[in-house]
Image (cartoon, rainbow, N blue to C red):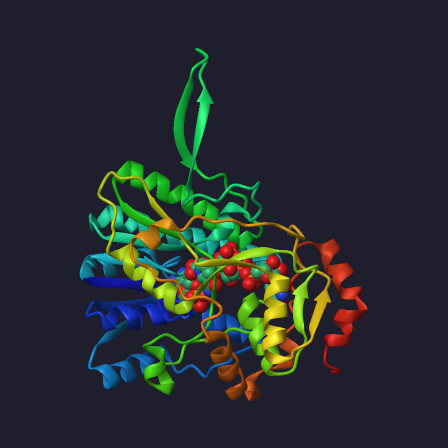
Length: 406
Ligand code: NAD
Ligand code: USQ
């Protein structure tokens, strides 16, 4: 298949590009490199040293003989160029990763909220409008988030996208329907993914676009089979307070002797998936495209759920790290349960990698190897969800103690 990978320079997009290329697909990475610019804005860098995307593609060719093409394009801002690109390349499938994906970054200031909404909603809508206009019947696979559901459950499992409901008619009968699961985003970033869902629903129904939306949990780990092939194929690894995600952060914190930064009580339960399973799921979803006229196919792309404090304790046991309970900069439930259905990927043959599978130690080893690249002052999460929370968090003595002397 000819596959366009929008956002193929990112944390999930890069290993996906390699995985699908190794399966023999023709891969075109489309990226505006905004994530690299955001690193510069924030004054941080990936824990792992990343080469330019052109250099990464060159190394892949050298190592495997396979070609990856890179196209520098902003899909949110350059609609006409993107449409012309699609006309020219006519992909069989489009995988859409190209959004601003950090919740804390999306909550840093009004400017960051506006950027995240403009970038994410326009990127998604431009892809949809361009597919309709060019008449290209490509399967669109989008990386969404478990966060569209909100995280609390009432003792029932979160279904895969759709909720069966009974609606009482005026005649007193009950009509059964399946509706999109009521969305309850917890940040501006998660809100954009909720808006994406409505865009997908409309374009599938109005224009017969074939769309799969993958509601993914938190991705952990760093290497996949292909990124291990050469040091310059290494994946990016975010550890800072905005882009680093919880488990990967705990693992690097353990590696550099920084107390594990649990927000609040650590009672938040979240869904997780290893990066190797993430790329495998995308392969499986590509092979199971919906037909024209079918509703949006939604998969829950996760393999297990964990409470944040349990993860901290697990990493502490493994490494001897200390655990610090800090005031939570986010507005979120202190404690929640989370039960999630993921039967569709299991039925397609996913054999989940679990936290116990020895891969936690691999991340700690990677972090130790590149520990000299870590700026400890960038480890605390400082982006607060409201001004009141910002003031409270700032006054906290424990958090102050974690800040390096300047
Ligand atoms: P990332 O930030 O590492 O990668 C996103 C890529 O998209 C970057 O290379 C960026 O430069 C590019 N991009 C952003 N806006 C663009 C635009 N307008 N035009 C062209 N390129 C653009 O993020 P990631 O961690 O790889 O996540 C990829 C997708 O998966 C995101 O949509 C995210 O919401 C979703 N997701 C990620 C996780 C996770 O834990 N990392 C979990 C669930 C879902
Ligand atoms: N947390 C800590 N300590 C930390 C960092 C985070 O306790 O040092 C807590 C947070 O408060 C939150 C939980 O861990 O309760 C998860 O935070 P996270 O930053 O790991 O994940 P999140 O902000 O939800 O976002 C990440 C990705 C996003 C993706 C989402 C999937 O950045 O792109 O959509 O995971 S999900 O969480 O399932 O919505």
